[in-house]
Amino acid sequence: MISKFQDTNMPKIFVIGFNKTATRAFHNLFKNSGIASVHWDEGKLARTMIANDVNGQPLLSGYENTIAFSDMEFVSEKEAMYVHMTHYQKLFHQYPNSYFILNTRNIAAWIASRKAHANGKYLLMCMESQRLSEEEMVAKWHQEFCAHCREVVDFFNGYERFIQLNIDEFNIQELIKFLAVDFKLDVSKWEHLDKHKSNNGLKNAKN
Image 1 (cartoon, rainbow, N blue to C red):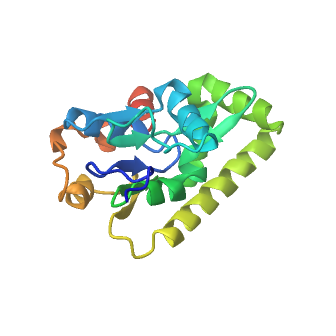
Image 2: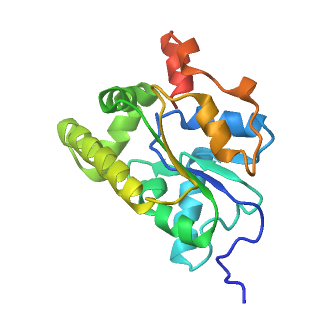
Image 3: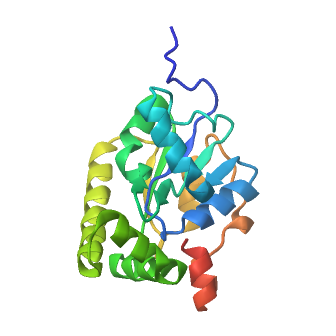
């Protein structure tokens, strides 16, 4: 008997690093390589996944035809949802044989990028929703980043379809080889970070 949570189609790709770690660059690579991909979706992606979980439905209900998922978060003045952090284990169990990518970067640069995101509005929304000062919010980001990376690496230890990629230094060929069994990526579609030295370029590349 097939569980209602079991996906019988091709494997999914889950990008489970935080925003501002090239999530949009990964999304664009997948999309432009012909892989159905969703990135953030104005926060609808995270909210839908949380609602599905509460209602006992598969997390990806409503996104059945999508293969790659990134930036699975929703932040407003009232709440903050980080599904990539809270639900990656459920995704692993509900969608067998899927690929998981933990994208990271230098933590100081990541925090600076997050603070500047949306001209500082992102930081203010996080602070308001969690009722924290800027200093407390930044400290929490640092703690969450470190804890998430550590817990994800521990959880996926020995799982061949997991990879950790530091966007400051990795070679795109690592990702191409990692997904080669099921997906063919068009390397020309990768938005190489080294090519973006201006502020605008870095913003685009590291969303």
